[in-house]
Length: 126
Image 1 (cartoon, rainbow, N blue to C red):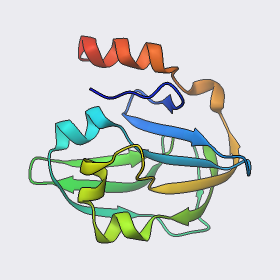
Image 2 (tube, rainbow, N blue to C red; image 1 turned 180 degrees about the horizontal axis):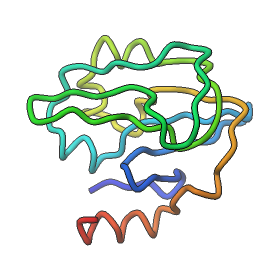
Image 3 (cartoon, rainbow, N blue to C red; image 1 turned 30 degrees about the vertical axis):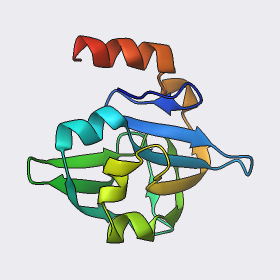
């Protein structure tokens, strides 16, 4: 199970990487893609959409399940990863290199989970 130390996480298995531009990239964690298995479809909200923490930013669908991709932060979508929507298996192959949405005007970073805590939660199966 791969959980990089340079990211933040949510209890719903999204990761967050803050950029030098003050935006936040959001994707699905390695444990999430393992649970889903091979992703068949990713649908994301449109650029410009405002999001609140926990609000759906899209969904990922596999043969096993459909997972809501929840916004870990308040913000506005400034970019969506079109390549990930065209090739959803990129999330399976490189979950931490394949961001799904980029947010600006972000707020709520205090709700994010540190890597060590996420590792413990995932190991315990929570």
